View 1 (cartoon, rainbow, N blue to C red):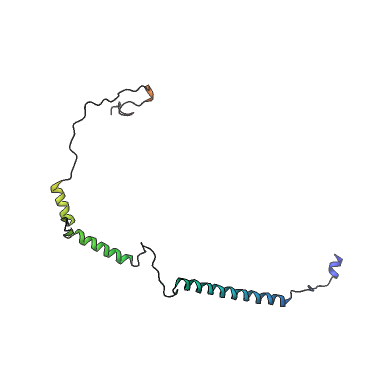
View 2: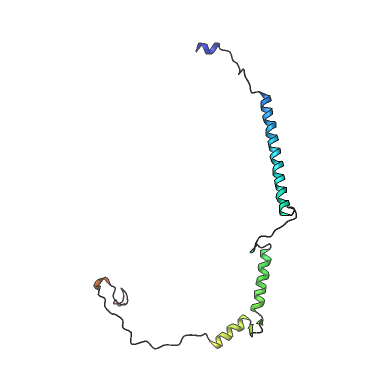
Length: 150
């Protein structure tokens, strides 16, 4: 302990050489500038290889694209649908197909009726097994609640 008290406060005798640090910083800046110049040159090469300038070229993405004005597009779409659903017009004049207002189409369907299947007589020559050879493992005909009365 005694030796620590008598020891004088000092400093490190050898410091970092400022010329070496400065040369390293200058070299780093030089490498960055050269790298940027190479990248810009490569970019210009790619543009000239493609045959155009990057500033004026606007390529549209493939369809379907995002809408630029979705609210007005939806309003125009709904107005066109409402116009088609509330007016008369030709769909295909050659084949004689027309569109009618939806209210009139419902009235015509009520008058005409919907198509349905005709009743068929039950087939009598089909045999259905009523019992099983598995015994108690099988459910009774009609399911597990068939024999219960309410």
